[in-house]
Length: 406
Image (cartoon, rainbow, N blue to C red; front, side):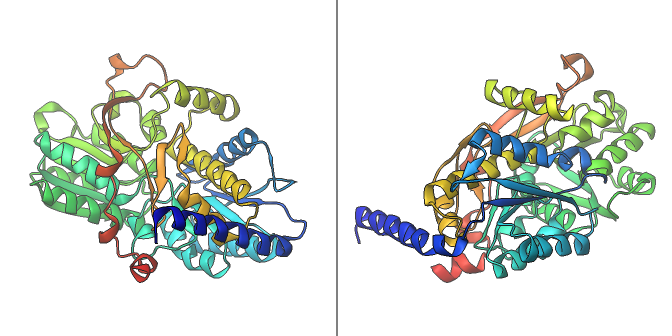
């Protein structure tokens, strides 16, 4: 079959599916569920996710398929059972077509099968476990944010290159933490480094004193904070109090998953020098600054990468619905994967078969206080990592439906 013929058949399939689906959709418009942590430790990074989603809807035009785009929001309180129950109700009783945000890998992993069983769409902008596009992948899900493979890959290679070859991990004891520690360790060893030890702590931990003292006595020259939100900021505050950041100690800190708000909360005096990675920097160019200024006026805070990814995911989804002429899941997913993702977040991205959105990402370092020009001027951009060097190769992910298609 020629490439031209294949494209003709693909287009024909899309419009045939759209014609069949339109009769089943009746008069309902598109409805998007936004699942966030509104009051918990991830609230600053995710809690205003509805703001980003609604900005995307407004920029799209607020209507699709002749109907207004609706949203529904919820706070799952970082509890998998609560989040799963809400999402199930959204699908069964509230006619939600797609969900987004979900800043929790444990919850995201729990709902992957639910999304597939209910034939809905999961626009992942919050969770970071690489298993979500690997062994736990779903044909109905797309991952826009960073994942644990990319985070570990980017940060470990650079830190080892700078001489940080003996690592101690302070890891959040969740699916996210386990995946990030695993993937970072793999990249660390491949780069020539080694692991001096690991301590795992519960989510939303308030006391890292014992873990930090163990790390400081291990002989490690890098303490890696495999955590996020208040866990990262609490660990950094206590490390500063214990004098672990003094140059004479010979210890540097890295946080593979960078969250702007974590470093803002703890302050540059404490967080300066931390190497991290992310998929978004609000101050990168005119387009990111324009979006961020608009977001700030609504939320009184600069957007995180989760906010930017939520915007990108919702906008791309709505464009696909409009292009397909239907909200039928299989049809829309096919259009999403065959259409470039182009916006201030993705640049010129694209969606792989396993649902991984591929785009350039950033290696960042927290600025010294005298380098910062404003309250939210947090990062020095060390490197832009090309998309083909960021994410796990498709053949290594173990995504079952991709393997079956081969």
